Image 1 (cartoon, rainbow, N blue to C red):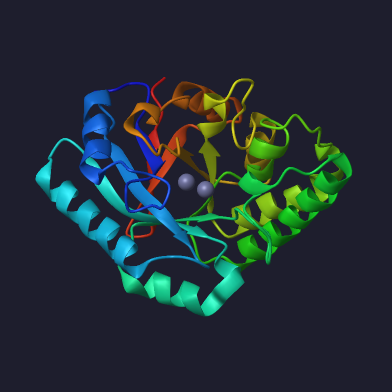
Image 2: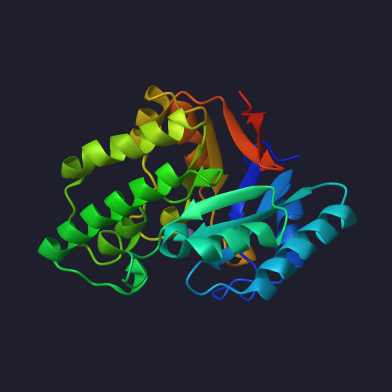
Length: 266
Ligand SMILES: [Zn+2]
Ligand SMILES: [Zn+2]
């Protein structure tokens, strides 16, 4: 039994466009690490999703969950940009039964993934403002369980490209995002993928996890966003330390779209 990582609820497999890892390899890596519960959350970026890939990911989660009795494998998706095509979103949500809907925003409406953008400081200001505004609209939509990597653009703008972003000016909209999540009983993800980069940080950092708690947030999900087995659970100790520092005593997994809390070890 692993005392460090109780769960990892953000994982990709070769049913995502950007991973070559078979689902069973991810499951076996989790078993090696003694992680009791994982969720497969393959990309369902709504402007270019694949029915076949999502259905396959879902079927593999069911099959692997039945195959191994030392791990629970949950049927998730990472639903990207749901408001950018609401009809396709309804279709994706109706395609399968899911345990866990992880919601994310990788690109602004009509724009490219932040991964491909290299804004200067002035452009970054505007992009990040529009990102949080669109994220607030997405959170108000509310048809999901947890909000993934809330500070996603910073992964590239600041941490990769070194362009400074003054977060203070976004405090009101971020507060509104976190308050809305809390009021709706939704979870905030602590995504540890940033820690894999030099100088990288949690997405979001502990100050926002704390603010979420202060605003009444009850549920935290943990995700390494691993696309290869080697990245699974990397940074989880830091993620859990941030959750605890913010006052959370449990991580949450979603089973049949219902929150199930797992207490942290003392
Ligand atoms: Zn993502
Ligand atoms: Zn992801």
